[in-house]
Length: 212
Image (cartoon, rainbow, N blue to C red; front, top):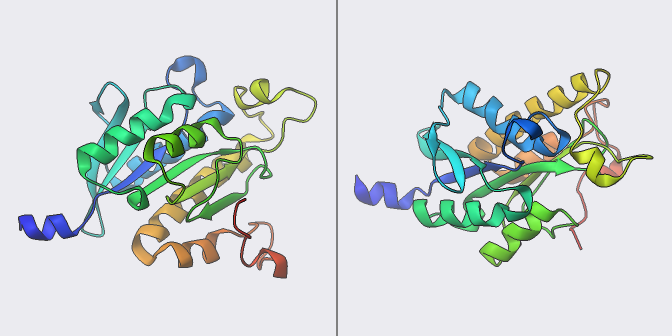
């Protein structure tokens, strides 16, 4: 049994955000929202509070999974991820990091197997900590800041008009994670990297170009 467990790596699903009531439900915390949705769907309680992270353990399709929300602030997310990798003996490729993305329209999600930080401080710190860009990441679009500054935008909450699209994106992000775990990242990307407002992606959206 121990040998079988050694051959089955623990998948670490990490949603990024800022801890504390002040930041609850802000745009920057949609990663936390995805983890909460998965915890509800999978019946996993996130009740193990460590110094750098809150986590819950369970199984998905008979394989061990961990759902985690860092207790560090966004720009120190790498500390939490490094702890999780060390504790569970997982590799960066066993990660799925879920986070907000201003470069995507509100309501869009985008899954990739690897890539640069693209200016996201949480991802930048994770890359620094794990020393590779080769880990899956799932971005949830929160739209650009418009006339407001980037900080005010990401730390603000969704308006009543925006909330339905944001909640739908979080749900579809949870479904994309489930698809990734059960069917692999290629199928998950093809199925979920589409605009939900169209039945089929445009020809130039069938496959995303690699991050630079």
